[in-house]
Amino acid sequence: MKSDNISYNFPFSHIYVEKQAADHPLTKEILSRFKKSVVIPIDHYKDVFNRTHQDFELQKTAPALILAKNEGASVFAGSPVCQDFGNDHFYYTSCARGCIFNCEYCFLRGMYGSGNVVIFVNLEDIFTEVDMMCRQHHMYLCVSYDTDLIALESLTGFVSKWSSFTESHDDLTIEIRTKSFRKDIYDICKPCPRTIFAYTLSPQEVIDRYEQKTASLSDRLEAAAYAISKGFPVRLCFDPVIYFRGWQDAYAALIHEVAEKIDLSKVKDVSVGSFRIPAEYMKPLRKSFPSSSICQFPYENRNGVFQYPEAQQREMENTLVTLLQSLISKDRIYRAEF
Amino acid sequence: MLYIVCALPIEAKSLVLPLSLRKDQFSCPYETYLAEDHSCVLVVSGPGAIAASAATTYLLTRFGFKNDQDFLLNFGSCAGEKGGLYLIHKIIDQATSRTFYPDMCYDLSVSGLTLSDERAVTTCYQVVSSLEDSDMLYDMEASGIYQAASRFVPPHRMVFLKFVSDAGIVEAGQLTPEALKMCADTHATTVLKVMNTLRAACTPIPTFDEALYNQTALDLCASETMSHELRQLFRYALTSDQDMENLLQTMKQDGKLPVSSKREGKVVLDEIRQHLL
Ligand code: SF4
View: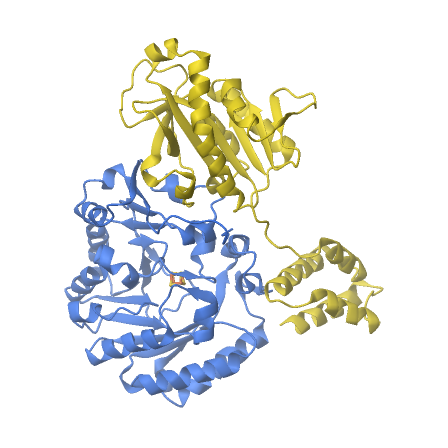
C-alpha cells in the first residue's frame, strides 16, 4: 500500500527493455526521452509484469515502463461486458498494457495485477494481423482497451498511426477511448468516419474521488468539442456509472453540463452502462485496493459478472437514459447488455 | 518490522551494534539478533545461496512477516569493479539463468542512494575468478534470498544492498577479516539511513473490528455464504466511512439482533445491506 511518509521515484524512473525490443526504432526513441531513468535489460516482459504479489497501488505512484515486443496473436474477441455498438465482429487489441491514469475501479487491477506500463513497440506486427483479419470481414476494433492510448501519444505516436492505418482499410472501424485532455491529436490526424474517439464522462465528484490523474470534466468536454469541430466522429460514454450518495443530482448536473458544452446533434452516439466487472477480476481488484469503497462495494454476482444489485442498476441506467433521451435520438443511445 | 539477512557474522556485526540488537536466546538453527522493541530482526545465514535461502525462510516464518508492514533487507559483500554500496534492481541466478526483479518504487536519495547507485547482481555458486562484466556485481546469496522470500514477500518489500569488497578470486583470497569489517562498517551508516526511510512505509492497512464481525455472524446464525457477505459489508462500511458498530448497536436495541434462525438472519442481513447502500 502507498504511504504518505516516504518519497517515491518519479514515473518511469526505471525502464525495463526486452532484449528483442532493444533495437527497435521506437525503443530507441522512447529511451532518448528518459535520460535520467535507469534502463534494465530483461529477457521477457512477463518476468517483470507478471510477478506475484505486486502492489498495484504503489506501482501506480511510481510506475515503471516496460518496452517489449508482442509475439503471437495480439487481437482478441471483445469481452461480453464491453459494448459492441451493434457490431458483429468486435475485437480488442493490446499495443500497450497498463495506464498512466489511476482509476480506482479499473479492471486492469484485476486483470494484470501490475501498475506498471508495457508498450509493445512492434505496432507494425499488429497491423499485419489486423490487415489479414480485415480481408475476411469488417472488423470493429477497440485499440485503447487496456490502456489510455491518447495519454501515451507523446511517447508512442500510436494514435496517429492507428488513424492512418484505419483510413487505408475500408473494412476496419476503430474506437479510441480516453479520459485525456489532449486536443493536439486532432490537429495531427485526419478525420475518418471509421476512427471513433470515445470520451468517458463522469461527474467531477467521481473524477476527483476515483479517477486520479485523468483530465477534469471540463477539459474532456473541451477536447471532445474540439474533435467534433474538426470533423472527427465522437462518442460520449457514460460508462461506468458509479453509485455514491447523491449520484442522481451529480449525473443530472453532468448531463446538463454536457448538453451546454457539446453540440449533441453532432455526436456519433452515446453509451450508458453502470460499473461491472467479470467475476475473475473482482477478487484481485478488492485485494489490490482494500481501502476503496468502489472495490469493496457489495456487488451481486450475476452470470459471472459482478454488478450493482439489479434494482439499483436499473434505476441508475434508466435515469441516465431518460435524461439523455430528451437530448439525443433513442437510436443513438447504447446500453450495456450482457 | 525490518528483517535482515547477512551471510557473514562480520557483515552482521556492523549492524548489530548500532541497532542495539541482542542475540536471540531461543534455541534456533541460525545466529539471530533481535531489537528489544521487536522492530528489527537479523539472521546470519552463512555463505551461499542455499544457506541464505534456508535462513530467509526460517526468519520470515518464525517472526511472521507481514506483507503490508514489513521489509526484508539483504546486506552483504560482493565482487565488483568499483567500490561502493549499491542498491540491486536485478538478480541473475548464474546456475539457472533465471532473473528476479525487486521493485524500485522508493526514492532512497535522502538516505544517500540515488538512481546511479543501482546495479544488477549475479549470484554465483563459487567465488568468481574474474569480472566478466564490469557493470555487474557478483555475490553468493541474493538469488537464494529472493527465491525463498518471493513466496511470502512482495517485490517492493525486498531491498538488496551490496557493498563491493573485492574484484574476484584473487583479491578475495587477500581480503582479511579486518578489511572486510572496515568495508562493512563504512557502508553500515547508509544502510541504517535506508532502514529509517523504509520504516516510514511500515503503516498497517486499517481493518475492521474482527471481534465485532465474529459476534455479528453468530448473532445472525450466519451460514458460510452469509458470513462471507457480512464480511464484505464490514469492508464496505469501513471504506465508505459508515459506522457499523453504531448500526449494529441500534439493531440490538430494536430487538432485531440476535436472531434465532438462519432464515431470520437473512432478513436482518438484508436490512444491514439496505442501511449501508
Ligand atoms: S483511464 Fe481507463 S485504463 Fe486508464 S486507469 Fe482509468 S479505467 Fe483504467
